Image (cartoon, rainbow, N blue to C red; front, side, top):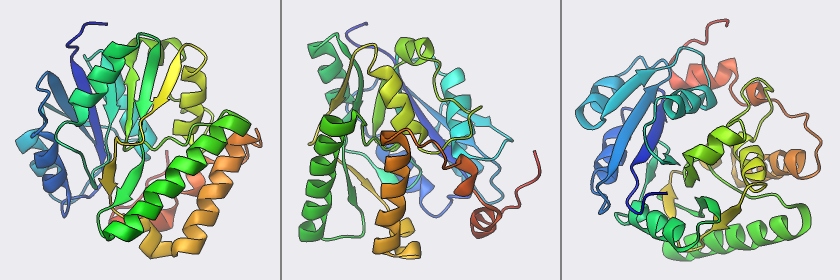
Length: 253
């Protein structure tokens, strides 16, 4: 890998006009400058695309509904050696890319890097326990089940290895594709967890469903991968109700 590789940052969007500009402005402040910013629209009906066009190097469109399909579309059109997945409702440290590249350069065996999350809306004490719970859960998960608790909003991958393992498996319709991809990547090198590589993200989903049910659902998704149950489908999350809340109608594929 080049010591100063081109990084492709992929941001899938669907009606995110309220928060998208803040996220993209934040990304543009990165101290590491050798990157391209790719936004993939998944059928927005608000001003998200217009906002994206102000900041992105490329704005692509994916008709098939589901962020996983938008993500794959971005990866397929990325020129970078490193692929970084970002969410429209998340903020990244300005040295985020710089730290990722330094980590890749330190160990050629590293094929992917990920880190934990804190919530934009939470205070320091609450966020400390959120971070601590994430770090402990990830450690135990790897030790006992070889499952990496990876979130798409904080994930960097070597493109050649991503292609080698077949990337995200959109044909399976199984949920938790980030977990599944990390497992495949680990067969060809080290999937590195950086506890200090923290991304701030929105807790809007926790607010909507409540902390207990959100954590219970997260556990079910993890267990489905960790114990090879493989029953939870991707479409179980992206329902008609989900798209109605997003302000769009999901058409039959």
